[in-house]
View (tube, rainbow, N blue to C red):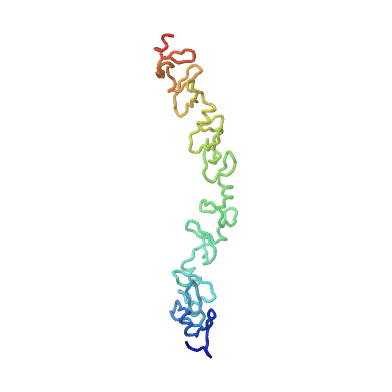
Length: 269
């Protein structure tokens, strides 16, 4: 161990080191010239890499980057002018370079300065708020709804997504519901009565005639067939002889009180 008496030394974590040992143990090599950065030289570091101050240069134009803004590409240092010339996006609105480190907005391959990303109608910056693109222009949601969106015939509010058209009138899906049970009707079979829409179940329960045999509703919708006689109706499957249960559809029949009978079962009455 060499004596440090009368020698220059450096303290690190309260331990003294001679210059030679300190540089061997702790000094870094310059990224550009690969030489050791001595204790007496200024060490500039960026992302665990180190340079002499005289080596801290733009890779393209060789200008010094000391105390100046810079960018990196593929681990190479570049001044902002060279970086912008080669790599920076151009603003879709003003066509000027978007400088490295400045906030930019991106959408479908296009970029804007934050201050240039504005609504076509109200001219307010959109930022990270929802917007709609129409005919190449950006609109904030409020302006798009005011200018272009259809209004729901039920709630009178704009329809932005998921609309339904019925009788040439626009509806929100959530507004187009059965007048009886309030179930959404979009994509479902439904019918109407007196300008109100109903799901098939509610319509049958509210308005359909009841079968004289099973008392369940007869919808008559979708081409389903039923039998009507005097003031009574039957499902086709329910129009059977009371005694032998033979189907009377398309055949002659007799009535006895409220019963339907085939000719054979009714001949003794």
